Length: 214
Image (cartoon, rainbow, N blue to C red; front, top):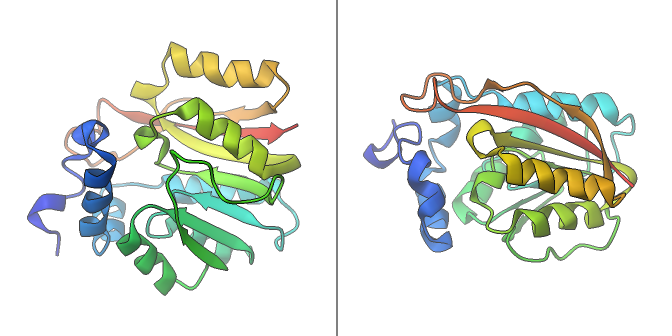
């Protein structure tokens, strides 16, 4: 049963203004019903993003970082597609506990995407980040970090809300491409985000992006 505080993320629109600690506590409280709450309202982004990445990576044994993995919806989908070396990272311990129960990750790590991540350069064949860029303070630093973590010819796959995909973000991803850090493989037209959400359905969609590193 959904708690009063987390009726399918009714506070999500305002969560970007919350402190990092408040966001962490919010997702901790929501973790136990997160999957049911959002999936029931048409949230399909983790599966769409995972399937798109699966089409690009033939070797299912290469490591993939699920950055902002939450309760593990992306990892669960990738695992079903045969991927075996998944690493999940999230700031919410309760969300990680739910992800752990799905037994699809090789490792689960508590980490903050607003800080440098403790992985070697080129450690991953791909980084996938679904539904998380919304809450990152320094997007440029994070996207550069993703490029650092991915090996040459690997992939960075992310989703971003249409209301946040503004001129500044477009200029940022273009600048990284001009620097030779990555090349755009695909960028979707606006797609439904949480179509049954009372305030998201008509106003807020989502883009799916994939970049090849190097």
